[in-house]
Length: 175
Image 1 (cartoon, rainbow, N blue to C red):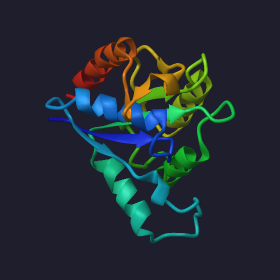
Image 2: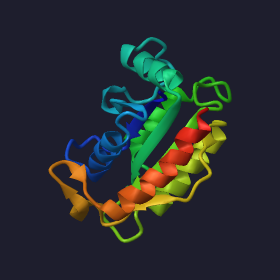
Image 3: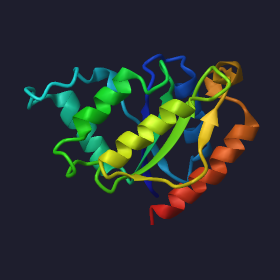
Image 4: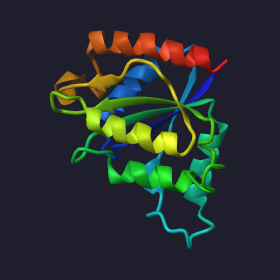
């Protein structure tokens, strides 16, 4: 069974991004092992720091995963700083990091009508720059996400069905 690492770009426990991750993981039960990364424990990126347990654990999680699922909210027309910080930690050494050839699946989530499309574009650009393998499926955007969360889970069957179809293709590409 493939192992997926979910990297959630929001630290808030009640965020729509986290609710979306929970819903997807529940639907993947029996199809994939899903682990949620804790990027809130990472220090601010500093190349002078060479020994940090939280960084080492996160980089090891990315390296061990068969695929990475990003759930990115949109903050100020881009990805959140905490998500960029996590990516920066795992992006070294340049072009040889754990992200090199790592299959990645991107979902953006927003309370607005556009569903985080700008954040998604920025995230894919960053991942391509690290030589990650961004899944070439249809873009998944969760619009007006906060209104679709009940009891800590995304409950929009239309978008979840769409995600099911796309993530099945991603899982199939993992071999």
